[in-house]
Figure 1 (cartoon, rainbow, N blue to C red):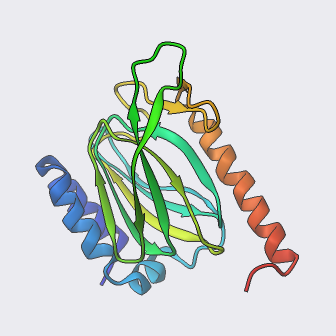
Figure 2: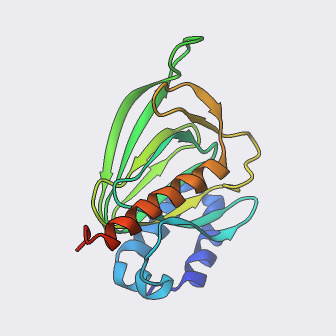
Length: 192
């Protein structure tokens, strides 16, 4: 049975072993999505919900609004993402050494469904999209302090793919705007 506190304690105990051990904990957690929802609550709002934050580990409950996307970004720490509701599409990017040109090119993609997880090393750059018309729910576990990383994180503009400093305030704004669009659609009868 999934219990938030027990999951966090497991992650704290194995984070020193690296992303493979965290992946096993995440896969076990999302294997029964009904238990995760029972413990964390039925999602009704897009957002970034921290469950635990320390220098060596961050656990976040991400709720993605329908059809929302998040621009390319890096973490500068390993990440394991496990889906317990909906779908999450990740586009992976390769950094380019072209001064003045776009800083990235597409390098691959992965589409995750309920019960699946993806593991990303500290140098991975990815963008995220919820490709479906309902909320997507994911447990994200990072091997460091996601909100205060020791090395500055970077994001890339969606359109130009030019590099800029990562901005958590902008990330929160993207989630708020996506949630407002979702709620407007529900109010208009666009959702089931």
